[in-house]
Amino acid sequence: MEKYQCMICGHVYDPAKGEPKQKIEAGIAFADLADDWICPVCGAAKTKFKPVA
Amino acid sequence: MAVREIVPDVYSVGAVDWDLRLFDALIGTPEGTSYNAFVVRGTEKTALIDTVDPKFEEDILKNLMKLGMSSLDYIVINHAEQDHSGTLPLLLEMFPGATVIADEKCCDLLDRLLQVPPERIQMVKDGDTLDLGGKTLEFLVAPWVHWPETMLTFEKEDGILFSCDLFGSHLATSELFVKDFATVYHAAKRYYAEIMMPFRTSVKAAMQKAAERNVAIIAPSHGPLYRDPSLILDAYEDWTSDAVKNLVLIPYVSMHGSTAKMVSFFTDALIERGVEVRPYDLTRADLGEVAMTSVDAATIVFAAPTVLFGPHPTAVHVAYLLGALKPKAKFVSVIGSFGWGGRTVQYLTDTLAPLKAEMIDPVYVRGYPGPEDLSALVDLADTIVKKHEGIVTKP
Image 1 (cartoon, chains in turn yellow, purple):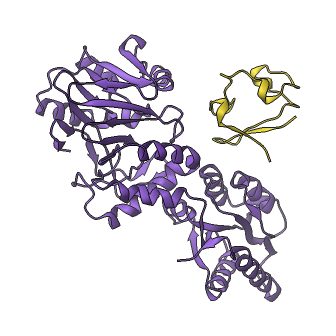
Image 2 (cartoon, rainbow over the protein chains, first blue to last red):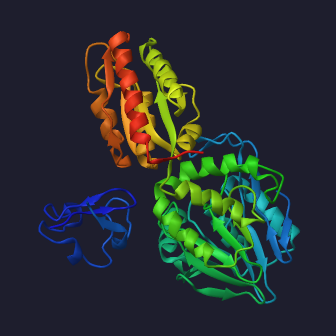
Image 3 (spheres, one colour):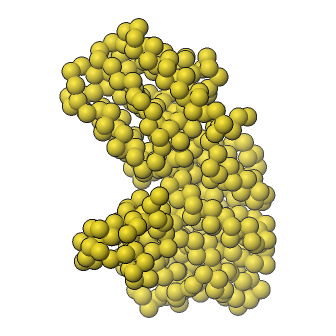
């Protein structure tokens, strides 16, 4: 599954790890995160994330 | 700052901070700054756009009194940072009938930072308008033009864009409007480098919103106003573009002269090859100048000696700052000298990782640089010349 990176602060969402601080388990694809999900580091909206090349 | 009329019924009521020399306890502001605030008076309602740093609350209150403002209907907050919003709690006390206008994220921050009661706030969405009677304010939500909640306010009838921090400059001046852009350019570029550069993509999106409107005047919240918006818009076009210049930035620290010797030799090697170069001794340099040079540099070469087990702390400080400011440099490298070992190169490389620049092989030598070390620097200069071919814009 593809990793996504925040264009504001550089944080990477890695589906293999999930987002432990937000209690999001490993194995959840970026696309399946809620629309109002926000970057755990800087609070940017989901739309500010781009796939990591 | 005295009250000044921008156009009929639109006034500048902010304050000039002539003596500020350090902003955010971090970056020098050698020319001071201003906290601009504006009154827009319609036939029906009156709005204040932004406030001032709390240090200058007396100034804004006096200005509002001079304008004979016994009441105020709206206070538009484009940005919740305290140098603009900090006077808000006092103004809400002085003007009990005033409603705060802010976007969704700003509402949250006003609550957290200034404990503004939610019932005093009217939330606006992108494109919402407010008719004051012959003066219409349009709110343009422009997130991440430095903070998540940033907003621009466009006054339609006169074409004034109140852009808050965007297009601003830390410059204390008695002139309301830019007279000589050559002098303001430097301050505006410095400001861009320090504040806006990490958000280059979002800045472009906000510029697009400005381009879609008939903007006659740009009124930022720091520094003078623009009667010719193209001056600052063209400059931003250049700074936010992907283009880099044939320029190498060398932030350096030296303790006993070895790294300084390398920097001096390397600087000459680059000059001889027609590359523009700007070394900064970080023990003396103004961080704003370093940031400003990083706006254009195609390559950044960090030069630092090893202290105990890693880089000199002053170099770490600046590498961290550049990592956060994310200039568009395409290449980075590290040079310097060590006594017996350590992780300097790795540490600096990791700290500069957010730049996503290609790492060119470092030249990290033991002790005072000998002929072989200098020859490695010549090779580094040659490599940089080659790397720059085709990617840099030459004047």
